[in-house]
Length: 476
Image 1 (tube, rainbow, N blue to C red):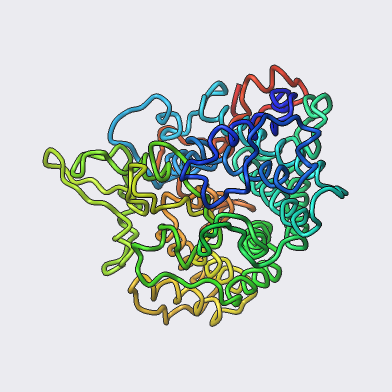
Image 2: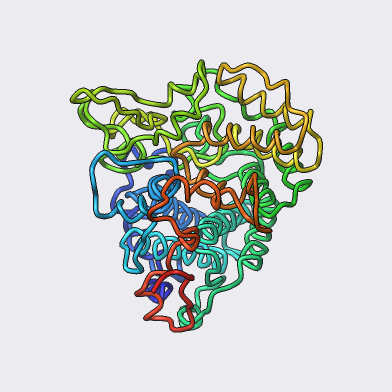
């Protein structure tokens, strides 16, 4: 199964990679004093420098190439929803555009196996650091807090993409290899517990070495921000509002008045960014969405339905690149503007302040605190150059306005639209429990949509390796 590939400790490989490239500029902000020799696993948690290098190796693995947390979620969730289209047919993307994904789909396999690889690394860190007396206590708490966060972060995306997933919390691959799927509610309980552990272990300070403005390592407020989202998804409205308020009122973050600055490094809005280290691009999104030729036809474009939702005068059009090629106009995502590796000025935005305002607005709306909910929403609108909402008097109106702002604010970003469709209640439900996806996708793709497409298939190879895994409905 997935964990079997990590039978041999990941730390040896990661530390060897970092040891090979200790002087590259891409690692400057995270430099922890990289080891110069190969290190066996029992030694990893025997010193401060090696333990920190092990944690940094996890960030490195996330960002060194295109992958689940470096482009894939934004790309494939955007294509699966009503958000993105392609200008040309590509075999790897077409199944998502028609919501007809096979169990041997390569991007699906990659998202599943690579994310479980990150989880294994987190488990190894947590096990190795727990009770360690060789590592400075304050450093140990920081590293463990980051590992708990990244494990929760990984499971959050797995559970929202696949539903029930195996819950592996240790490095015993012989047991993990035969684990069945764990119910969503139990996985969410673990995610919540991990984020609470992270909050207790971390501080509000950002750990960097050479750039005091970088926010590329997890801190306590990042844990609170993700926890606010988790509470929102689980309809724990008071808890969601409380965690979002803690982030908003920390006075560390500000909505960028210049929209062009939002996704750059040193963004005042950033709660957490992953630092770019790829040889070819600043970010995966920049590499995917921005053509090499300045006026060239983009491969990925925003759907007509997305474009129609953008109000006149909305300054967020700055996040859209519009070109005319062969007489036809194309609108593509332009939040990230660099599709090369130089200059190094854009990081992968993971968590940002605008989401916290939207989370608190939705939580307050569900708590019937409509004036406060509208006030939060208007802060996001004001930054976009839009007038305040003044006519909202009902909860349903507020929720419709929140969906609208989330759709425009977070397009082509971390799968927000796909997840919102799956969790937001239907506006005109004909059956109990219907969600927005039941209303939107049948209209968007009447010829190909089926309700079972809301969850992606468990990779066929994983089910062959582990017969305890049961496939999602609608897949062979």
